[in-house]
Length: 147
Image 1 (cartoon, helix red, strand yellow):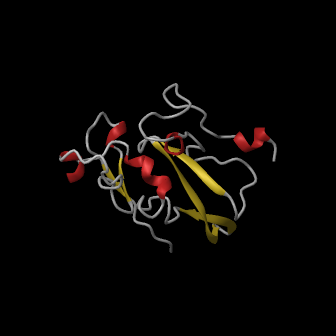
Image 2: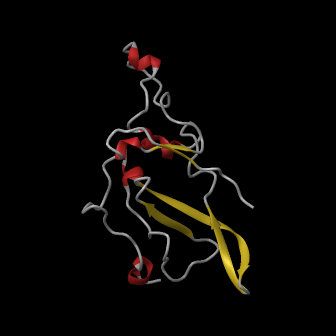
């Protein structure tokens, strides 16, 4: 697929930035995908559809979960994969979303330099997106399920 078709409908910047600054790491700060209303042509069962969700200040993605029918038309069904909001202890890619922890860990309070990097991360299915909301505490829980 040509680059032009592949990028059709993609968000290339948000608030005049081509990447985010809320998170700790390139993986978490990427602005990728569409707004979720439109996807580039050529979607298959093997596609990973990326969406930039501005309310969460992050890119999320959906994967193929089955075939269905909508008003008699065969369609692909996509859903959030279980690993997208996996605990960073299980999937280290998500560690960079713990950039601004909601509370200091005990080790940090007593000045332990070998503090557990996961101590203040939320568990599976939760997002602390307060770092992009002027420091206010916000939490979002995604019930990971497939029908």
